[in-house]
Image (cartoon, rainbow, N blue to C red; front, side, top):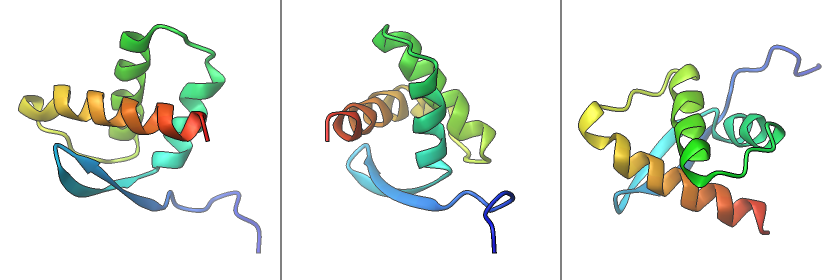
Length: 80
C-alpha cells in the first residue's frame, strides 16, 4: 500500500509550554526546508502558513507564540 495520498500525521510539540498536536508538521518542515530560505523571520512566516494549510487552527492572538516555537522545533530537527 503506497502513501501517495496518505493523510498528514499529527506530531506533538510544545507551543507556549503546552503540548499541541500539529497535523502535517513533518511535511511542513520538509516543504519549508526545500525553499532554502535563510531569513529566520521569513521561515517563521512560512512555517505558520504551512501548518495552517494542513488544517491546523491558530488564533491570531497565538500566532507569534506558534511562530517562535515552530521555528525552535524546525531548527532543532534541522540540526539533528
